[in-house]
Every structure is written in structure tokens, then in C-alpha cells.
Image 1 (tube, rainbow, N blue to C red):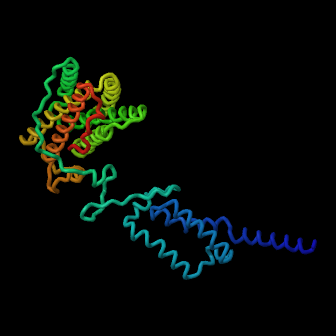
Image 2: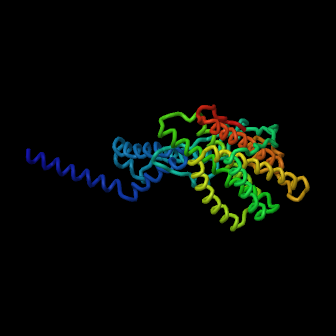
Image 3: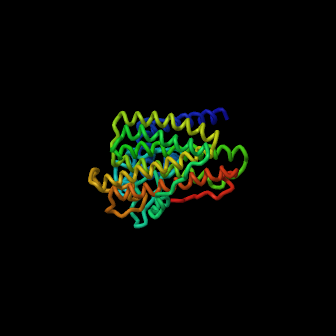
Length: 352
């Protein structure tokens, strides 16, 4: 028995030496590298990586140790590897996209979205089901006359903010629109965030108002993304945006905590000023003082505009959006003025 155990031990040592020789560092790296390539291309990264590594060990254990070395690949195996490597390139299309593809252990596949005509959707910031056609028939002249003290304070706060804006931007309506949208996108996010926290604290629904206000914030942000394609802000204008956003965010946050009806009323008046600004923008376009360039591609897809649309068409749909935001915020303020909560009235979700 001693002799048998010694012979068994010697065989075990010989096998381990054979394993180490067959699977040298260079050989193992070559196999893993060859097997891991498809993981970067296909997209289902985590599962593919795990499956390829499993195949690597499967070949070593069943088909023999020598089959794991790069030197012993048969012609058939090489052809299979070439097919596996060539397929993703043909399916993916662009090698640059394959090179820049993000590989993750978690295997979250990238979604492939197409338009109604079957062409690939190129925007990641919004999806086809989030697009819409703006309602241009909305009344642009509606105005809430300030009666109460809070209404008057909200009205004159907005009017006081308009004076330095007119002085700084004057007739540069492209840059003015960008500045306006960096401010207009803040209230919806702040209001939605505070209603979200309130819903969590009280264990109650919001009546859909969280979603409605966040929709407003996202819509205003898309206005900014659109005008970024038309105007190129200078460095000091970008610095001004950072300053104004920092101040306005905190001021509106405190204002909404103290009095939501004041905060929504102020946004209603802010949207009224936005309607006025975009009306002046359209006048300058009609006079020829601003070149009526083709509409940016992002605007055509977001508002479902005709392919031959121009900047004037974009300004019209943006102005219509502002009119809808005006109505929503004045309506929200009226709810609070009547001693009710927003959740008691159905939220105008998707009101464009």
C-alpha cells in the first residue's frame, strides 16, 4: 500500500507539472483574450464573459489539456473562431462603436430603439414615445392679474429680474433663450423633489403632481438642449449661468418650503415673461435681424416637426410649451389659495 500511494503521488505531481506546462501564462492569456473579444462587441457583456470563461475550462477538462494551448488549435476550430469574430463586426456596423462599447460585469444590455420607419433612434436623452406635437392653438395672451399681497410680490419679483436680463442680453435672443431655460428648468425639479419627499414622509400619493412637475423640468431642459445647437454662449455667459442657477435654486427651494402658492405663482409669471421674450424673438426673425436657419435635428425629432422646419418653427413650439407651463403653475397656485392640496386635483400629466 505504501508503494501504491507513492506511485499515486508521483502521478499526481506529473499531472500538475503537465498542467502548468500546458497552461503557461502566455497560452492562457491568448485563450482568454480570444474568448473575451465577443463580449465587448455583442453587448450582453456579463453573461458572455462568464460563458466564454466556462468554455475555456470546459475545453481544458473534457477535450484534454493540449486542446487548451494556442499551438494545437485545429483548422476547424480556427474557422469557428474567425466566424465568431467576424459576425459581431458585421452586425455592429462601425468598428469605432465596438471599440468604445462599455463592458460591464453586470451585463445590462444597451437598448436598441428605432423610429416608426425602422431607422435607428440616435438620441439617448429622450425616446420616441416621449416626443409630441406642440399645441400651437393655446391662448398666448392670458394673464393672471395680481390681487393678493403674495401675488403682487411674485409679479414684481419676476419684473425685477427682467430688467438686468434686458440690459445684459439686449437683442441677442439666442443666448437670452439659453439663460431663460437654465432658470425655467429649476422650479419643476425643485417642486417635484419636495413633493416626492413629502409623499415619502406622509405615506401618501401625490395625485400625479410629482410626475407633472418633473415633466415640466425635463421639457424646459430640452429647450436648452435645442438652443445649444443654435447659439454659442461666451465664457462669461456660462459663468453667469452657474451663478444664477446656484442663487435661484436655493432661493426657490426656500420659497417653496415657505409658501408653495407663492412659488407656483411666481413661476406662472416667469412663464408669461418667457412668452413675451419668444414673441420678440419671432419678430426679430421676421425682420431678418436673426437668420432663420434650419431647425436642429434634435428639435425635429422631439416636437415631430417636418424635416424642412426652421428656427422660427422651433421658437413657436417652445413658446407654446411655455404657455402650457404658465397654465399649470397658475392652476397649482390657485389650488393652494383655495386651501386645498395639489393631490386633491388630478395632475395635468402630458399637458403640452
